[in-house]
Image (tube, rainbow, N blue to C red; front, top):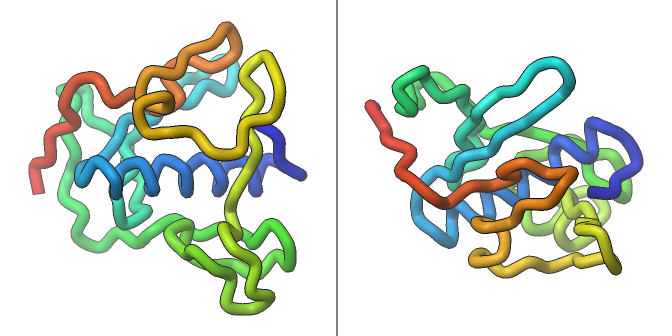
Length: 135
């Protein structure tokens, strides 16, 4: 994925996962690797990000808030679920471009994202299996 810095990249990935979760009407799994650690997260349609338990379940969402990140144009902080930046008006304020070993891809279908695996990306968003909610 291409972004100006890690903060924009993180927000862009979470925004993309939240959009997919909204389409699927359920949380989606997001596996993040930052050597030497790997985290298995769930991103809810609301933009809330949670660490999955060892049993692959989600704790209650009570008290949690959607992830916020900077707009890719003006830097204004806002929820990753925002479709338009209220400060500068840019559409998809958290959008990042995806590179999967070829030309830039700026819009992936849900079916592509849920099955996307490359040598550089491990289970970016894995729609296989259930992410159960214990709320």
